[in-house]
Length: 434
Image 1 (cartoon, helix red, strand yellow):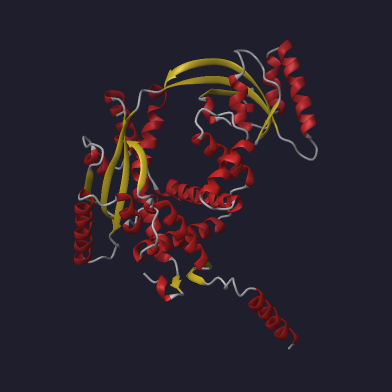
Image 2 (cartoon, rainbow, N blue to C red):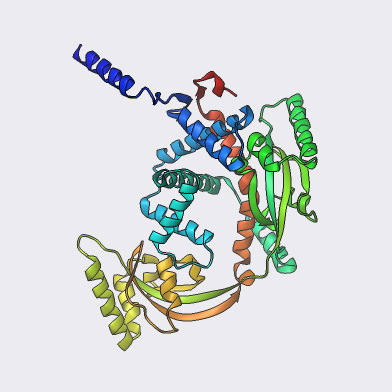
């Protein structure tokens, strides 16, 4: 009785004090998760601001809800496998985003990067904390998609060998095509009549686009592709990086050309060439170095780790063989430790920013002062530098990456369709039913 009265009192207080703020309602149930009306409204407001429109029509609202449903499903999968993006990883992503947007400022501090991201959030009328959590969600989804695609995409040695030979003989095509994409998915159990109806719809879209309709708006409201809410923007890629179906269709075309509809195993595709970009042959500066890594613990403090590394460097300057001995005995990078700390030849870009910065300051044979990364405390010695033709160095990896990218988007769409079809989705408000 007391509990019932307490609950009634709390509800009365909530209703009395919060009359100007009606309770948020559940719009969609997705497995064990919910999508609130406020989330749908917030995304609609964001899109209205970006597109400078007053209202969101039914088709675009349906796209927004479907996008949120897929986010919920993928986040549930990530939670089940224990995938979490920690604050350190999130801070590194924020720094990378700021550096990418502020080109020429690779030496940004974390505080400067956060200030930049806060400005970005403010421009979107979004609190920084919310923007940060949205980025955490985006990174989580990228990782869970990547993990599943690595399991699903199979690339045979024969495929790699064939492409490596082609690269060696013909060279990489250096023109990059900036594409927009619309996908109309044909359900797996669709009848021939349903497929014909979707094809006719795609053909009408092409006609409308050629007549001047906005590709971005049409993609946002009608496309089933992953980039729908970005206006179908796929970014820039070479012919070798595209699915073969796209590469054959766009080769030789010019900016603003509308291409399609193209039929694949998952549906009908429409493409637009936004821009063509030339790409010069790349050269990379590689380094060969060796290092010692110490990880702090309740027993080994930062101060102690730094002191130990200073002693290792001092003794190594007297006897260069000592560095390898110290690495084998003390380094917690177990792979390089067996090689006396030798990391082999690498592009410095693969290392943590602090490690890369330390190498840039060294002359051949020099040792760094102790420095800290997310992995622990290091000292590094620069052994050699060389300038390499990137194509000569990474033909095999390039071939693997190209084959992977060709298969990624189509395989991802198939997986998204599968998890969406398995999900239990219930629309709790009539206006949210497609």
